[in-house]
Image 1: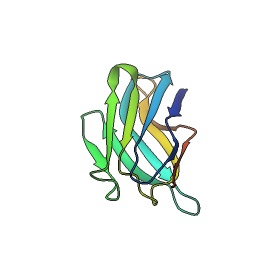
Image 2: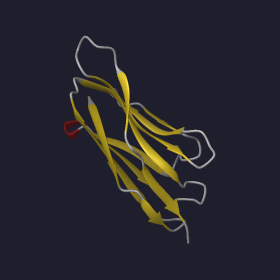
Image 3: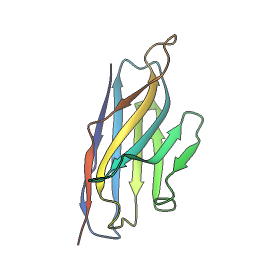
Length: 121
């Protein structure tokens, strides 16, 4: 199995910054992508940012220019630097990885438990 452990959420004032971290561990042969999703109360879970193994990135329009995703391949860790946080950014942020556990297996998606981000003055 693959485990994802997230950290870095919390309370920040509007305009402030937070950095989320997610470390993947367990039986991992290769990682195709790592990313962050978020879910606010009453809303569907949405993609925030994703980084694929070839270095391609994808961002939600609402976070472009404010959030930056990066990865430490050696540590199977993905970071999300969130700057200029807005009142519409609060949500539970979830880490997701698409990974193969064995070379001959198809990739599967694995999720973290989520970390709360609150933006309030």
